[in-house]
Amino acid sequence: MIIGLDLRLSEGHGMMSLQFGKSREPIIFDLMNIIHDLTAELVAFRNERDWEQFHNPKDLALAMSIEANELLEAFLWKSPEEAEVEKVKEELADVLAYALLMANHYNLDVAQIVRDKVARNAEKYPADKARGTAKKYDEL
Ligand SMILES: [Mg+2]
Image (cartoon, rainbow, N blue to C red; front, side, top):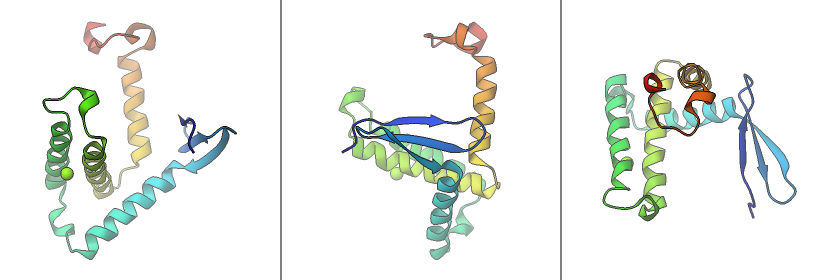
């Protein structure tokens, strides 16, 4: 039984530490390998169906946006607590799958592009100015 889950990304190593259970023993996964393996599974699934011909970056972007809107549908006319987690899981998986296929198309290092974006956001949103506020960076 999972008692607690603690996710931490260590700087620059692509490693993810997970801590489970009462013992709090750390289980280390290589985030890069997880992303690589997931992408390989998606590409294999796609190629077995000869769907690569449809997976140009424009249509991958459209598909990602459509799936993001299906995710929104899980929350439409409901409070956040009323959304069905199964629907959220389903649509979030679709969004992530297309995102990984897009990154694969451009041969992008997913961990690096996210880190680069977080670094840019850290400059735009210094913690001492942005803490506890939803203001846009140019309003801080
Ligand atoms: Mg969907």
